[in-house]
Length: 116
Length: 109
Image (cartoon, rainbow over all chains, first blue to last red; front, side, top):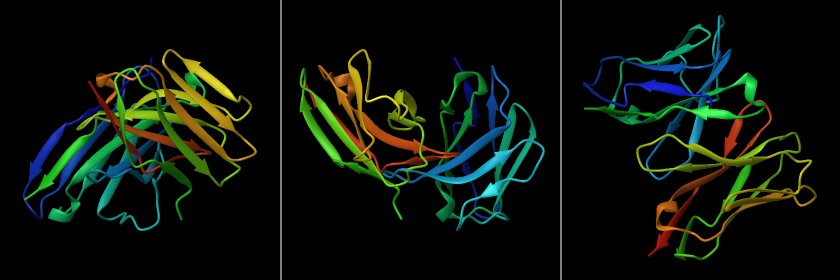
């Protein structure tokens, strides 16, 4: 089945620094990947749709200059949290849709970001 | 505006019982309705999904019932086990996935 790998699984960074999170589709090519944010005991909120070779589409209220998304290849999308602050601490999850599998979305295992 | 409403927020079921989680939607453009299971610190994992041209789908102990006219769908977990204790999310998709708020299920031994 479709596998999405996300790295790192957790990261702690100092306020003001930047953090990069990687999302890879391991056994399929993903022209589109999705980035979600999840606060404790809450649902997943779509942040942006990452399109290979073009600019990401951000959801309303998501700061595109703070959350930089790069989808440089058909198997890799990255999310960079720039100038991170404690309020950016959250669980970030990526997803991709395997074109071979109909409508199914596969999720990565998530990245726990803690900004201190 | 919450496009997918999920209930209950939490649920306690005895081992062997049936767990039922309900969702409702407004957007008639949705054409794919998955259910995800999420354990703490992990990404969501697809349990079962249905398309609107089908009224019911069963996979093992998990069944989705879908009522297109009422714009509602539900997840039934038969013979619930302690290992089923997790958070369950319904979702609906047109070009992107929209999640319900989730249901924390606890199956007591």
